[in-house]
Length: 415
Image 1 (cartoon, one colour):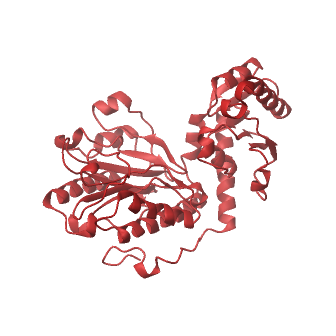
Image 2 (tube, rainbow, N blue to C red):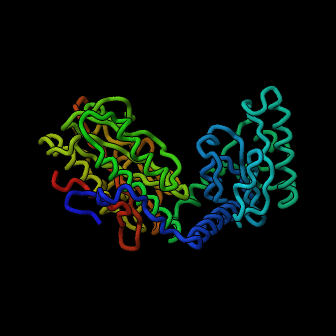
Image 3 (cartoon, rainbow, N blue to C red):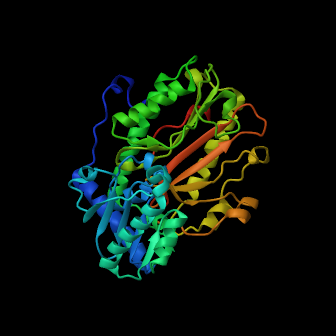
C-alpha cells in the first residue's frame, strides 16, 4: 500500500525482493493465447506461415528468448510459425536446451547465420543454404508455392526466397495486430512487470539526493528489474534540471542539485518480457517545487488525465485526437511525439499523432478495443525554457473506459 509520503513499498521492506505471483498455469495460458493470435492473423491474410526474426515477435509467438538485445542486431535465430502446422524454432549454436518444457515448439533446428559478421566472405553461400533449408521446411508443411509472411529480413534473402517460388507478404503489421489485444493471463504477466517497475521507481525515489549523478540514480531501476527476473530497459530517459528541456536527453554523469526537476521514462522490459512504460517527475531532494515547476507539472498532469478520460472501446483514433487536450501554444513546439501508444512486450501499435498539422501529416484512423493496453503521454516545456515535465500513465481499455495499470502516485500536493 502507498502511505502519505508516497512511499511504495515501505522503505524498510525494500531490501526484500517481491514475490512473483504468476502461476505456471497462467504463464502457459498466456503463451497459448499469443500463438493462437498469430495463427488467426495468418489465416486472415491467407498466409501459410510467418518467418520471424524480430526477437520480440519470436518471444510473442513461441515464448522463447535468447540474448534478446544481441539478436536485435545479429540475425542469429529465427522462427517459422505455420497457420496450420508446426512451430519451428531455428536456434543459435548449441542452445536447444534453453527451451526444454516449452510445449509450443514442435521442432528446433540449427539457425544458419548468413550475416557478414557470422559468415564473412561466405555470406552468399550461407544465404543460399539458409533459403534452401527454409524452403524445404515450407514445402513439407505447406507446399512449394506457399504465401509466406516475413517480419524482417535482408534484401538478398528475400530475393532468394522469391526466386524459389514463394510469395512473400509483409508480416510486421500482422504481428502488431496480433499483439494488440491482451488476454486476462497476459495482463497478469504485465501487472507483475509493473509491480517490479514500481519497486524500481520507489527505490529511485528513496535514493534520490543532491550530489548524486543521473547515472547513479538510473542504476537503481536496472537493479530492481534484474533482481526480479526482468530483462532490459529500452532507453536511458532520465534527465535533471536544464537537461529536462527539451525532452529525450538520456541519463549521464551530470551531478543533480537540490530543487531541480528530475523526470524519467522507464521503458522497462521486465519479467516474462513485458513492458512497463511509466513516467514521473520529482524535485531533487524532494523539496517543495517552485511556482513555475508546479505550473508545468499541473499542465502535464491535466493532459494525461483529460486524455485518459476519453478512452473507451469503440472510440476511433480520429475522434480521440479531435477531443484530446489542447496544448497551450507556448508548449506546442516541444510537444511529445505522440498522444498515446500501445504497449505489450514493447511499445506497440498504435501511436497517435497530435491534432492539426501532425494528424494531417502522419495520423491514421482505427478503433480502440477492450483489452488493449495503452500509454498516455505528456511533455510540457517551453521552447527555450529552463525545465520541463514528462509524465506517462499505462492503462487498460475496459468495457466502460480505461483503468490505470500503474498505481504509482502522482505529486498531488503539486496540483
